[in-house]
Length: 80
Image (cartoon, rainbow, N blue to C red; front, side, top):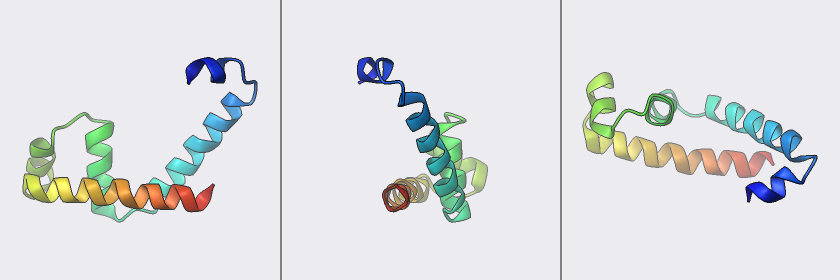
């Protein structure tokens, strides 16, 4: 939890490294998955709003988001 991180002088380094790894892995996602992930997590758009923006159905957005999260998890685990 955050208390352990607070008492761990390496926590900032580890957090920075994880952010770098995540950013690298996000860049390796297919373009549409990367776009859906970005709109969902950084722009706080709903699945319906994302679908409207990029011209696909809400269910397709949902599948793209699920695929992106799965692929990202696999890429991050392979990188650390």
